[in-house]
Image (tube, rainbow, N blue to C red; front, side):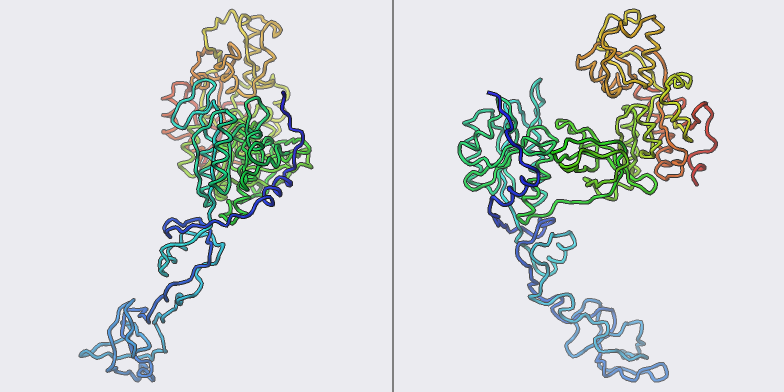
Length: 632
C-alpha cells in the first residue's frame, strides 16, 4: 500500500506543538569550571570570599599613615619615621591607610622624605574592591565565556551547576555503515547522527548515540522504547518518509503517540513528532540537508526553550544575485553564499537538493522564504542567517561562473591570506549578467578565441557594455572526455552529454561537428544538457553518456580519458573597478605567485605561459601596470 502525507502541519504550528506538548525537563549537572565554556548557568553564582580579602598595596613604595603626610610640599618636605616598605600585592599593615610610590620618596639613613601629601587609601586595593563574599558573580541563564571562567576561578568557584538535557540518538537504515568504513555500492556512511550529536552537545546537551538499527519494525520499536525511558529527548534518523522500508512512524504509533508526520517545510517535509513515555521523539529525514533543516529549525529551538545555550544567530541584509522561486504553502530554507561588493551585500543561492551536503559546506549562510511567498526577484533584499563568523563575510569573494579544479588550489592559497572564495556554478551568460548586475566580484570563464565568442549573440552585447578586464588563471585544453577511447571520425557512434547553449564548450562541440560535416540531429544525446562542465565529466564517469566536452583538468580529476580538441583560456572576468579592491589585489598577486604556477605545472593539465596576464576584451594586450599600480 502506498503511504502518503495526508496532511502537512505548517512550520509555525509544528514548532508550537513541539514546545507545548512536553514539560520542560529542568535537568542540570555540575561540571568543573574548566569545562563550563559555553554552558548556561542553572542557579546564580556567588563569590565564596572577598577579593581581595585584605587591604593590599597597589604600588611599590612605602605604607604610611596619611595624617602624617599633611603639609608636605617642595618648599616644606616631611620626613617620616613610621613607615613600612611594601611591594605591589603585599598586605598593607593594618595601622597604615596609604601607599606612596617609591619614586616619590627620598631615602636618607633609612628614613624617607616626601614632598607631597598622601590621600587616604591612595594606591591601596581595599578589601572587597573586586567583589565581596556572597555577592552575585553571574546570574541564572548567563552563557559562560572564557573570561568568565578566569573570574570564577578567582572567586573560589571550582564547580558550577549548568542546564543540561539528555538526548538519545538512534540511526536507522540497513544501508548504513559506520564512520571509517568505506561504503559499497548502495551503502552510505551514517553521518546524520554524528552531525546531530556535535550540534546539540555544542549547546550543552549530553548525547548518547545508539548503534545503527536495521530496517526492522521490532528492532526500531525496542530502540525507541529504551531511549524514551532514559532520555529527555529522542532523535531518530531516517525511516520518516513514505517508502516501503520507512518504519519510524509505525513504531512510534505502536508504543506511543504520533503527534504529526509531515511539515510544510523544504527541505524536511518528512519530519515527524511523537511522544513515548512522555518523552518527545523527533524523526529526522534521511537526506542530509533535510536533516540539517529539521535540527536547526526544530531541535535547536526546543533545547533553547528548555534553557540550554542559544545557537549563534547572526544575519545580514543581502540582495539576491538571481531570482529565487519557492512553492507557495511551504517554508523553504535555502543555503546561500554572501559577500560584500562595494557597499552592498549580495547572496547567491546554492543547490536545494536535500541530498547535496556540499551545498551547505560551500555556503556561509541560509535564507528563509516564508510559506506565503512564491519567491523573490533578482536584487530583492532579504535576511541571510550566517553560518560562519560575521567577520569572515568582509573577507569573502563571490565568484559566479565555470568551476574548474584549479579554483580549489587558488582557494587554498587565498585562505592562507585570510580570504574565502565562494564559487557558484553558472553558464557564461548567467555569469556575465551577474557582472552586469555587480552581484559577484568576478566570473571564472573558459573563453575561446574572441572570434568564437562573437558567434555567441546573447553574450557579446553584455561583454561590450561593460569595462571588463580578464585575469588569466591558466591555459587549458578542451576536448572529448570519455571512459573508453573515442574515435574522432565516429562522433555519431556514441551517446553524448552536451553543455548548455551559449557556452564555449557548446560552441566548440558545434564547431567540431561542423568540421566533420555532422548535423546535431545525428548525434545521440545532443539535447541532453548538463548544468556545468563538471557535470558533463560526472555524467560520463557515471555511465550516463559515453562522451562529452570539458577541460583536461576535469577529465583528470574524474579519472577519464581525454582527447584534446582546442585550447581555451580559463580567466577571471571582472569589472575594471574591482582592481581597486584590496581583496582582488591580493588574489591577483596569488595568481601571479610562483607557488600557484608550480601547482599548475605539477598537475600536468594546464599551461602557465599566460597565467597572471591581465588583458582587454577584444585583444591579448596586457593591461598597463601591475595589480598594485592599478589600485593604489
